[in-house]
Amino acid sequence: MDHGRRRHRAPLIVVASTVRHIGPAELRPIGIGEPLATHDVADRSAIVTGAGSGIGRRAVALLPAANGAAVLVHDLTSDAADKVVQEVVDAGGTAAAFVGDAADEDVAVAAVEAAEALAPLRIAVDNAGIGGPDLPVGEYPTEAWCSVIDVNLDGVFYGMRAQSPAIAAH
Image (cartoon, one colour):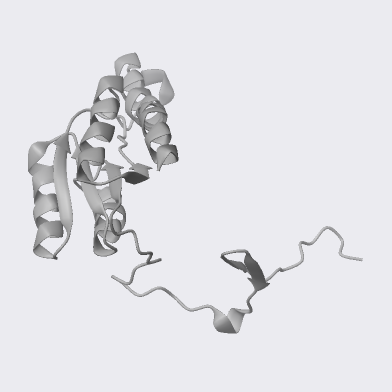
């Protein structure tokens, strides 16, 4: 009898259609700077929103570029986008800056067009996000709440709605 305790299950590794359990001895920490995954994505483009800084830059925009994708570095500011583009180009990759508000539906459509100009769009990471003021709910300004929802929720929806048909077409 287990008395409500959860049984430990080994992690699953999925490779193509093969599933196997691995034991703790096979697990190892990922080193700093070591990619989590590599895939050949040459001759494809990737849109990464919020790619000018943070996770969008470090973990998302640079990885597809390192694996051969032409990356559309989508950010709210040209300085941030241009710096990441230069970083990709200096490393031998292909990238283009795209400046616009991810929470704008027309910008999402234009980003897809810009990515398609680089190569067929196959990868989209709607990563743009903002944090609101650090305030208790009772003091939280409605305008700030609307801004957070616009970027973090609506922006993802607009991006996916514009990107999905282009990705499915290839």
